[in-house]
Image (tube, rainbow over all chains, first blue to last red; front, top):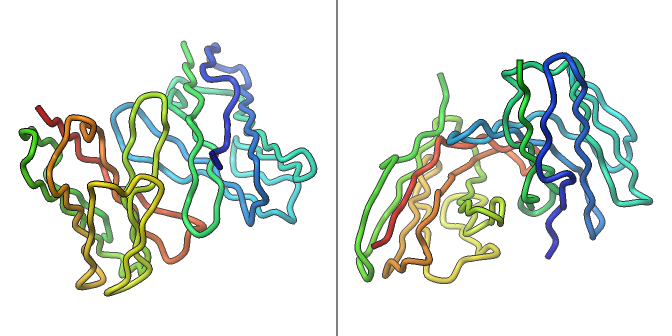
Length: 108
Length: 111
């Protein structure tokens, strides 16, 4: 499979804490993206990092990419209950290749 | 506002019936995609299109077909529905594969 693999599969934290999700992939990439899916709803694009970038920020999100290790991480700082969702690491290319996702639960 | 819509949102059908799921986008995106989402598998690509009259098979295309007669629509047809095709189906579109915009999904149950 060419899917990215997220780790952990599930994560439970308290509001205000940081959440870190990791992703590994097997083949070379043009870019790596993270999407969020709220329960029972469509997916929303969060952030894209290109293969020549090492770190990228967007609001409370920080994404890192290590192409030598074929891995990426998504950090959500100061989490909120509204961040409760599934997060997918997605390899960009001819078409998107999705991992199985990390389910994040943020309790107040 | 531009958007992407799917219909129906919920569908129950019987094994062997032909089913068509609609996807319509008003962004004028060239690229359109169909995915299915199942527990334990994430999203898997069924078919995709880079423009009118262009269609391509994805990872799990068996039993599905698409046609692209205009920019706005990419209907997905299940030629003979099977219970294994019970799933949630998502349509997406974009100018490139860098960012895709997803529809709300169609929950299909095949009995």
